[in-house]
Each structure stands twice: as structure tokens, then as C-alpha cells.
Amino acid sequence: MIAAPTDPNARVCREEIFGPVVVVIPFDDEADAIRICNDTEFGLSGSVWTRDGSKALRVSRAMEAGTISVNSNSSVRYWTPFGGFKQSGLGREHSMKVLDHYTELKNVFIATND
Amino acid sequence: MGCHSGRNTGGQLPSDAVPNVTLYNPTTEAAIAELPSATTAEADVAIAKAKAAGPVWRAISPADRSRLMRRYADLIAAHAQELGELETRNMGMTIGNSVWCANNASDVIHYFAGAIEKHGGSTLPVANGVNLTFPEPLGVVGLIAPWNFPMMMAAWKIGPAIAAGNTAVLKPAELTPLTSVRLGELALDAGIPEGVVNVVVGSGQNVGWRFVTHPDVRKVSFTGSTEVGKRIMAGCAEQVKRVTLELGGKSANIIFADADLEKAAAAAPGAVFDNSGQDCCARSRILVERKAYDRFLELFIEAAEAFTIGDPMSPSSSMGPLVTAQHLATVRGFSDGLDTVYTSDVPDGPGF
Image (cartoon, rainbow over all chains, first blue to last red; front, side):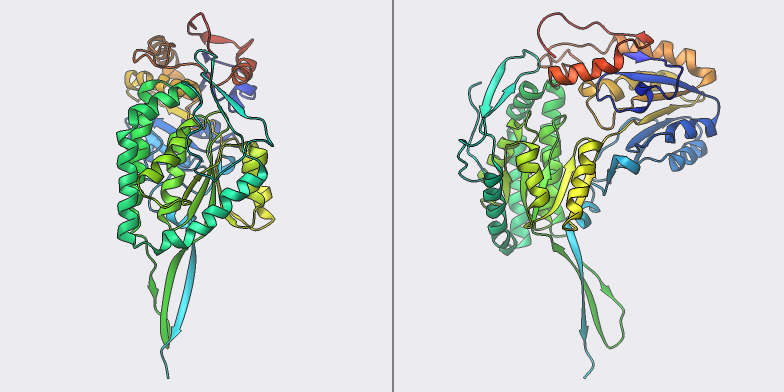
């Protein structure tokens, strides 16, 4: 189901539906796109589609989300970190980084002077 | 399929205290299995088994632990078709997706099998001595997996948890435990010692919450809703328990006018409708630069029309049902009365 709501504060624009419902929202420029993108308590993933490489990097860095794809909608690879900003989560899964979340770092000092 | 209780990898769990959990096929609405649902006391038995297995698991050399995990990964891949069919029957995702998820589960276990020998500490410069760091295992970790990608997300947690030297108690979502039960059995078949991977089927209240409160569970890794994640985090604060949360999303798909609009539109339906939209990464907000808006919408609707709803066991279906009648009602609560520009045909007959 594809919807084009006019009210950006409508429930359908703000809450996670977890079903086959999508909203399509227009924006005016790069700053407006980033503003709408970040106007949510969630921040898990996201995509940027453009042929301008600099804009792709600028927008990717400005998006408040943990896993971004450019000219793709992929999110998860088990060898790259995955997780959310804001209320989308805490910590990361996947990649060697996740092992830090399943261990405690212990420090041991050994004196060698007599 | 009859009752699929399988070997219980969480201990000998009598089922008299809590009613059994009945599982349904969301495509046919038929009951497909009935499993005992663990009590809190039974969760404690599994936690104790995991604790006892810790020293056994860590005494195995890194090379041999790695070999056991690789064998586990190979066994999962060898059962990919069976696991996929089980997942589709219990959860409703398309068979292409579920078999892919089984193979992804295998790949994840392979990746972390390789990590065992590569994850170490460091030395740091200090005066009059030597300074070393060690990444030490936590002990027993509680893993709580969701119903939207049950087997794959269980593997995402089991892999790093046991590779780091921990032992695991896994609580699959009560609606969709069948593939997790099989993952527990396959770990034993691979030769991973009993107690390293424990699967406990039960409710969030009896089992999941026990992971939060039990002092021997040193970390909880939870994937699910933001609402439940907040409760788990608050509960874990009591023991300053480590927590990893992978929660909800409302992810944006930003499309600029200078993009390859055809390509972006062709990819957009899969990014939000795959797994019937039951995906925390679903790109459920598409933001389109105003001057390309009408053209994109036209292309997007065209692509969405090709995204067909049908029997998830059929390779020609792009998506199957939602997971339960209750979830269907929740989703309908969002869409009823909505100003829509496209609504796809839903097949007649049973199914959520």
C-alpha cells in the first residue's frame, strides 16, 4: 500500500508499522531531506539515491541512522557493523566489532622492576 | 507436520505448569504444532546448564572450537531446504527468503568460527612493567530473537556469543520457535558440547524476563520492539547487566532528482514490502525531491504492481501473509482511511 499523506505528523509517517505500507513524501532540497529524515526517534537504516558522489557522502554522514546505503537499499552484512542510532537500539551486531559486546576488556599490569 | 518438540536442548523440562503453545501456519491459519512452554523454573534449569558448560567450552582449544563451529555451519547449510520450509510454514516468509536466511545463518556461523582465533587483546606502553589487555568472556548470555526473521537472527546472536567464549540461552519468539529448536539440535549434532547452545521455548514473561533478572545471565541481547527493549534495558540496570538492543525503525529512502530514477523505483518495493514489511530496516518513508516526485511515483507504482502477494511456498510470490491475525489488525489500523495512491490485490481465501 502506497500512501502520499500531506500531514508529516500523521501516525503513518511517524510510527513503525511493520507491514506493507509506505509513505512517499516530497522534499525541496538537501537540507529539507535531512530535516525530514531525522525528524523521528528512530535511526536504524536508510538509503540515498543520487549520481552526485559528494552529495551522497554529505547526506550519508548527516543521516541519524546506523546503517546507510548509497544507490542501494541493503542494510546488513555479517562482516560489517549493524545497529541503530537513537531509539533504534544500543550496541552493534556483526563484524569483528560485535565481539567487544560479548566480552569484558580486562587490563593486567605486570611489574618488571626488581 | 505433527508435533515438533524435538530434543529439548534446554534440559528436561516438564510441561505441566504452563499451557503448551500452539503454533499456526499464517498462510493456511491451521495449527501446525504444539510445544511445551517453559516456566521460570525451567528457564533456570537451562541457565544452570549453560553456566556448567562454560568451563567445558572454554577448555577446548581455539582451533577445535573453531572446527566445531565450522561443522555446525556446514550442518545448517546441509539442512537449508528443511529449515527454510519450516520457517515458511511457521512464519509466512517466502520460501526464497527462508532458504536464503538458512544459508545466511550458516555463513554467519562460519564467519564467527573464523573469529575465534583472531580476537585478542593488546599490549600498551607502561613504565617499569608490561601491560596487557584480554577480552574475557562474560559467561552466560541471554539471547532473545524476534519472529520476523527467527532463524537468521538467532544465528546472528549465537555466532558471536559462543565465538567469544560464552555459553548461550536462546529464547526464540514464542510464535516462531521451530527453526530455533532445530538450530539447538544441529549444534549438538555438530559436536558442540551440551549446554553451550540452549534453546528455551517460552513466553517473554517466564523466560525472557528471567534472563534480565537471573544473576548468572551476564548479558541480554534483544531484537524486537522499542517498547519491550526499553523495559529490558531498565530491568538490566538493576544488576548493571550488559545489554545489546536492536529495535524498531522508520528508515528513510532519500531519492534526489539526479538519481537513476528507474533503478531507485525498481528497488523501492523490495526495500519496504519484502517479508511483508515485517523488517526493522524497511524503507517505510520514501523522500523524493519535489521536481522528480511525480515521475518517481509513476515508476514506483509500476514496480509495486509486479510485487505479487501469494502463497509463500510458491517461488512466484514476492510476499506472503502477515504473521498473525492480530498483527494484520494492527497494520490495518494504520492503513484504514488512509489517502492511498496504490493498494495491491490481496488473494481470496485463508491467510493473515
